[in-house]
Amino acid sequence: MPATSHSPAPPHRPEAPRWAISIRSRPAWLRIPIFVVPFLVLWWVLANLLKLPDLAVIICLYLMVVAAFAAWGRWVHGQQHPYRSLGLSWDRSFRRELAFGAVIATLGGFAPLMAEAAVGWLVWQSVAPVTLMMAVANALATAVAIGLAEELLFRGWLLEELRRDYPAWLAAALTTAIFAVVHQWGPQLIGLVGVGTILVRAKYRTGDRLGLSIGLHIGWVLAISIVNIADWVTYTSAVPAWITGIDGNPLAGLVGWLALLVTLAGIEMSGIGAYLRGDRAK
Image (cartoon, rainbow, N blue to C red; front, side):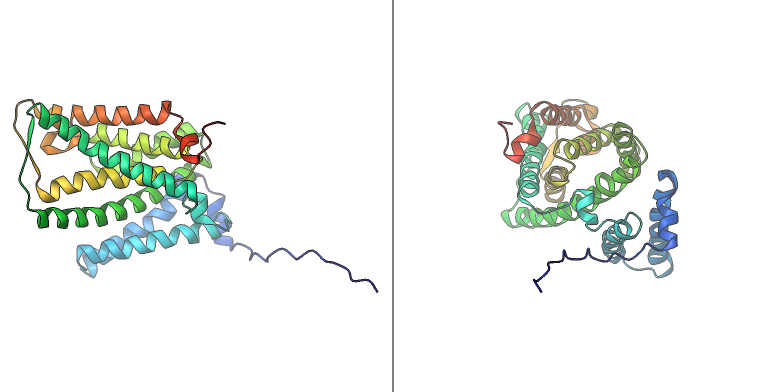
């Protein structure tokens, strides 16, 4: 008998449990608290009942939340590659976008300070090389951890949950508002709205990948953290604080807001997604 060829059977995917199907059928305003509330309870238990050090609490929650994204995607939404569905990958485009975002955000974080120093609004302080190197190392670790975790949470998981139920523009607006309010009320709220808007647009403009968003987030946190940790600048009070940033926070001042506006305009007008993909001719 002639050999017969058989197409390989599709991989067996276990049927989602009943609780996962139930969660999947809920609207976003119910699905999101189902994911978030257990971690708020866990945070309270670790910090108040077990009285773990703050750093230990942060590390525990960080690892558990990142792992939970994968479990949620697989069980609730039936995704074989949940991190990729959130926009996280490691292909060439993602790496290019990540590096590009980190570089321009770091430079963009220092550019307003250099301009303010040039007109006499602040003074750069002398910092020992060893102190500066330690500040850079500390800031880099902080920036990578925050950039990855917050982009996976806000522009990754939260944005995608909202997009399942709402138009892309509304999901973006809700994500940005939640991101800003969760961080802090006060003068920097306007700056946080600007940051959130840029990061959502960065994801949308690069084919729903998180590389550019993560890179931008890392770069901004890196620049601000280096300056703060090294105590590198002193404001001269030549202009009101609302211009340079209330309490030294660039996100709470006119100069910082203008810098964010320039960044947003660059993302919207430059065809950055095509450039980073290497298909400018298309």
